[in-house]
Image 1 (tube, rainbow, N blue to C red):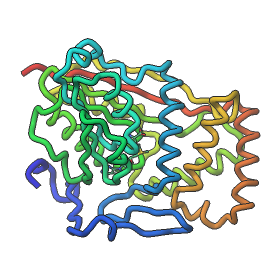
Image 2: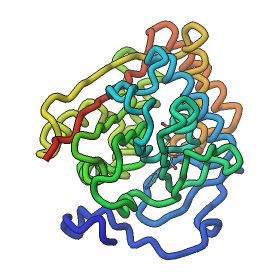
Image 3: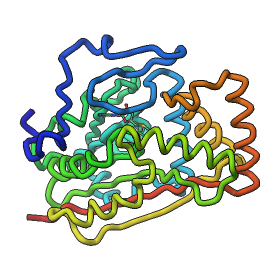
Image 4: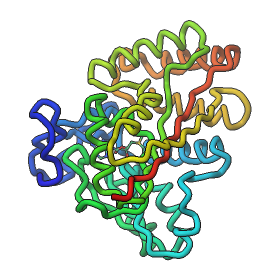
Length: 304
Ligand SMILES: C[S@@+](CC[C@H](N)C(=O)[O-])C[C@H]1O[C@@H](n2cnc3c(N)ncnc32)[C@H](O)[C@@H]1O
């Protein structure tokens, strides 16, 4: 792959994925459809239930960020037209589709290992490429004015993160903007059952090289990148779990996320036991005012 040639063999993003028709790259577990691609640790399905969960998450995030879909200072340029925007791991495409409707003169491209944006719903200024970004982004250097990426901590191992950031920087034009948004899962205040769940989920994901507490570390990767401005803008907001209307929706998504995740600790529960377990967690979240933090970073690529 021509885009990634900088890493040593064990740190390489190249997954040696075999060429196969995409439908053969799936497995079904407990009625849910998962991608089954060598080199990807991604533990979530790509079926309709998951698409609906991602849509819900998008609405919750948008609300939590006070309706600001992005913070990079590009509104005027986007409105004037001509900008190229990339969403890495675009999922169901809510971000792209939202922006494409508002900024009709700009071009929006999504890349994702799963194909979750229906072709019929794609306006003419939205494109989509199905690819494994661990094999590199399929674009030449300096292509995009704005590269956005959100909610990818379960997609990349901790070692892969700096390499993904390198790729994002590579495809961003000098003077272009990069915006990364991630949730931080180790709740600071939580009850004993919630803590048990957190410990089990963290243990499992850590065994896969994933770090669900990555969000604050992203700053350090951006800061140490020689092609990025040292002025890294950071934002933090909270998503309550189980309190008020938004918190109820956030808890619904949180619960569905665990139901979807392939984790042995949760898979041993029957459906009834799962419901009971999450009823306890719901109560605990209300009592302890448990919330999930969301981090956002936006930074400009240096003009060479
Ligand atoms: C939690 S979803 C986030 C989707 C979207 N960015 C959002 O914020 O709603 C993570 C996305 O990463 C995609 N993904 C996981 N591994 C990937 C890979 N190696 N290459 C490209 N996309 C990947 C999944 O298919 C999924 O759409």
